[in-house]
Length: 272
Image (cartoon, rainbow, N blue to C red):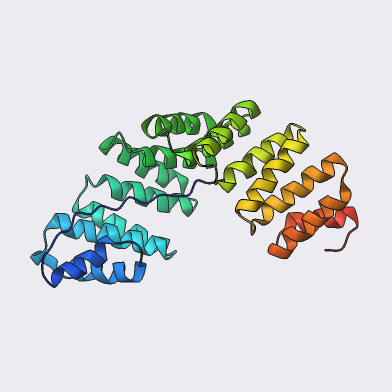
């Protein structure tokens, strides 16, 4: 599981009167279209605006474009913010995040490393660099970054989940389970923590515990097809073919394109 990527807004802009509305639009993130419009108007002021505020407007507009799924434009805006202010740590962090979600992990690591150099207490940068290292298969470096992120922010449930994933990749299922359990202690409603702990339990052959965790994950997120699929695998491991097939069919009902489930049902000689 890739950690949900958190964006750090820099509220560097200030104004009064009618112009304050445009600045307010640029500084909020609830409405990406309004944010893009407000930030664009700040940018278009050109030399009438301070370099600091112009850089912040490019950065915040990048956040809005990222939120709309336009990663290329987000990267372009973060790059412009960095050109204006080469020490803009948040712009490096968020550009690194955007690169990571594009699968460009080398550029992501470069940007996140720069962000950490500029802002050594940026837990978000450490955590997301850990994601990039993990995706590259460098689990030891990933774990080291998650360790640092957790030290800086001990209440970051997502960092525990990602560290657990890295430990599981290394074959340390006990430590993985401990991290998933810690994430659940921090956030008892974190569906992904239950789902991932369920996977770890299932791989240890602890099918009842796995089923209990998948069931909790499904209760929290009823539209998660993978949780149904994995619970089906656990039921099948217990020898309960009837419940397994029911879960596989539910997974396909939620996501008809779920190829793994189709293949399992085909192997079982069962129609979806």
